[in-house]
Image (cartoon, rainbow, N blue to C red; front, side, top):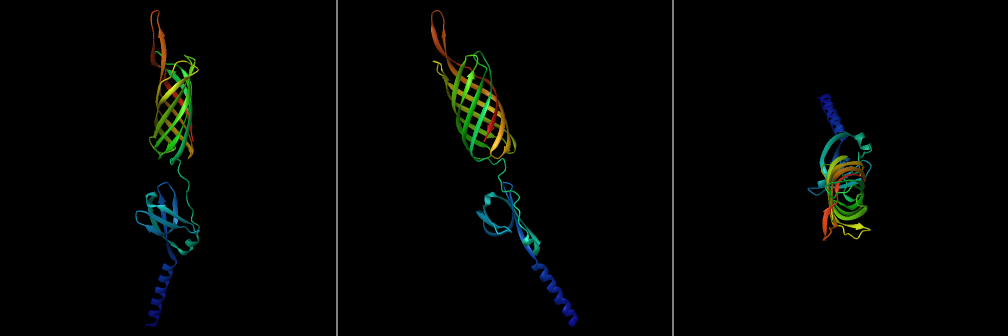
Length: 245
């Protein structure tokens, strides 16, 4: 009987020791792609959580940043393992904050008054999320057929259609322009474009686009008996290459 009792006690001790040598590790998956492993030491439902990693670091995240939380049972030796944060950098699609654009391109004149030429533009503003940008800028467009340059000043709205390193986008620039070194005034400027964005890193991307420039300008007409002013469109198709930063 004593032997049975001794074996039973030994079995209980072994089971207790086995459980005492195990610990629970939690893994927090964030929506931005980061993975943090450790122990959740505080969690406020629908608000925030606080996780401590094996090296003693403590991180706090809002619950709307969290994709999911998982748990796993580890042996005691795992407590000494250094927790590795897979990624703390924001993905290339997370481009919120200030954004700047510089592009240059070719204008292929269309219509009776359209003029071939080249253009250089820059715009700056705020990227609200991975998709929407609003800002303003200016450019200088040289119209070779008339040997004049226009300087448009515009507001711009831009939308990235999808997230990712390669993403199609659409933009619209609306404003007015002046004609440089000419007595004739400029006029209304409108330029919708579509293109593709190629992210190199979070704060740098290249893009290609094509679209249309509507550039109104006032012309002076005269005949032998009369003269008048009329506004015509000197714009055309555009093909641009740009840098986003």
